Length: 544
Image 1 (cartoon, rainbow, N blue to C red):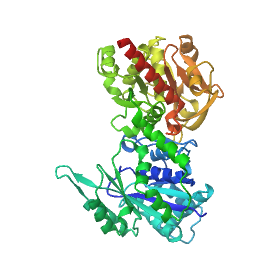
Image 2: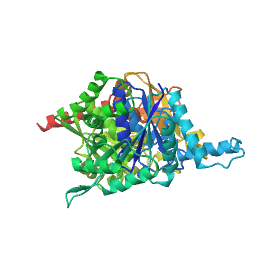
Image 3: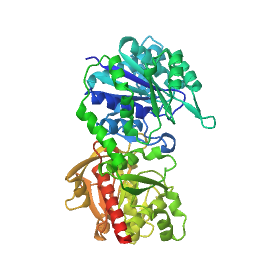
Image 4: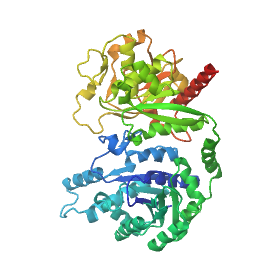
């Protein structure tokens, strides 16, 4: 079967959830046993997301192959329960780099290289080649940004041209504004945005309406009238706390049946696959108890910076049938109180577990170290991810080994005790993009340790994204003072996991949140949630 294509575009404004919609459509098609994978286009001229600020762009998601990609790839993997690859990430930077390379090689001799046809032809050929290589039944193509942006117009034009030779379904996501004081939903902005898309030669087959509350029939009638598509093809996608329910919400509107009919596809619903997903979603409403987990980070003002951390916690909470309350704690706030112990207790005392995630730069570091010390001293379940593991080692060196002002050279190049330092090969690096330790790396776990008990494996593979490493010059000293080195790289050169021996406290240089999926939660996060539940139960027993 020739690959069929579904193109997802967003109009009116950014941040309306194209990634969730694309992932949900992919999941629906997987319920019918079609081989489907999303491809994402981002118009920025960065080659990839690696050098972007999480405050502006959100989390940088890392794939097994080391690709640093848009955070939407996290949703693709979490919904589809499968891994993607860097080839599915197309950026303006990649496209123009390849075009210029080809021009220098003489591939366009005699021609002045233009957006049309050279760049649009390149895009179409690239997409078709990926679909063929992966033997996809259906490729979803999410176009980043907003219809009307200069940086994605040429890609939209390529999709229009693709539809001339291949079967392409266009889905437009728009936003229905609602004036609360008037109490009325308005379609005029959506109409004007739709006109922009039609001026580019594309009339969508479906319009998905994002809104705060459920859209009414009059809204569907108006949009249908102005878009020349049937009312049933106007899909309601109002705000919902549970993103994993969106495929089911779409299916309740017969979106799956209409889409399959338009694509001329005949597979029947795989009831087992569908029921499994539905059971997981419905189990959330049956959870009776709740735990509170503190995430102490430095990008807290934009929760998308920690999207995979949040979802990994959610996946584990689903598995353990417990409700989850995540407290987002700005690490700088933990540096202000002069009475450190009292300050920590006031902010963190009500939580059942504490997590310190990854990050870069000096700001807020001392607050994270304070949180780690508070967790260790008070035996509160703790996990440190990447930077969190590094600071866990620094805290131990300072407070247990009495190495005053021990630090990472990332934050203090002149520190006497360089507990965390750049790898030798990193010291020679001058380029910033794609030069960190990236992608899936194997680790060897020591038996009879917490790490080994969590994974129940001797060799594990998790994804990485960092430049600095545990300095082995201090390995023996920290171990002698009780720190457990429970995992290393296969060659025993780099530290991958460390632990406290008297409580649930474990850090990993990797990012296990990146591989967690709703149907396959991370063992690392599941063990953490279990420890939080146990801690809460113990606290309640002591109160009694």
